[in-house]
Length: 431
Image (tube, rainbow, N blue to C red):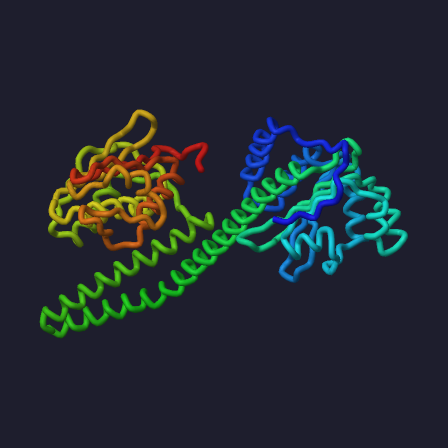
């Protein structure tokens, strides 16, 4: 990279090489502390003063190629406001052949080891500007571009007002290394911000789509039931009635998928609703098993143990968790038809429900991801099973909100055991 360099001062002072790596490590730590790029730039500028400069400013190019001074730091905090006023009174001219505008335009660093009064006169358009520049007591300046993928997005200005610090090529090399790390931090912040926007748009779309789908699906379900009842009363061939029953079953499945998408959206927005009260856990489990068993005649769901005390929570939400676990147990046990549910009263004020299957199991590498949103387990043939991968995520959030835990123990080819806890009484401190 070409640098614009004037004659160096004889008393030029460099940062000692022994201190450089430690200082760069400090800057990197600051840059990684936040994904808010303006906050990051402010912290970085403050860290560069007084180690690298008596004052330091970071400027960015806007979409309209306007220069925006994002932050400025000075050894004397009282002069920061004054420096900002100067920046407004003397806005940069993008056509200028030197200085910040030229660095932003060309992407080439500029180093001025010694600032002379002749240089101030040459860069001033009016006497008032010259008077201001002379009051700054500039002795040495470095201006380094911030570039991302060969695109200049801004620049850092390092200014010395002390005759004991005149920048050298070695200082410029350090400044350019700092600038590359700052530019990377800005790029990462931009990627994160854009990804968050995309996630927000996705969640909003899922929420709107789910709401819009619920009405036609409900109507379709109602009309299907009416047709089934009318045909039954007319003594129509049972084959047609069986087909209608299968259609209703698919409508029920579609309803569950839409509800799951809506629940995910509510979780992300912190609006998942709960209607809590004390209820009989054993009865809820038996009622839920009866519903699930009717749709899975090949599998045999057995209930063991009991919980004599009532538990606290949203009965329908806990039933939703159990349905998800049982549905998964059935799905991932295509050749093993036994599923066990066990109920236990724990000593820590919690009731525990375990769902054990003897199916394909879960590889140890997948266990840590199983409760992630949209994650789907992979079977022995390395293929994923049908589904959106949100049932366990929703279940985990529901149990967490109840003050309990949802855990899994499994190994490939040996089945899985999912267990969740729910309190007997309302938790005092709950997320």
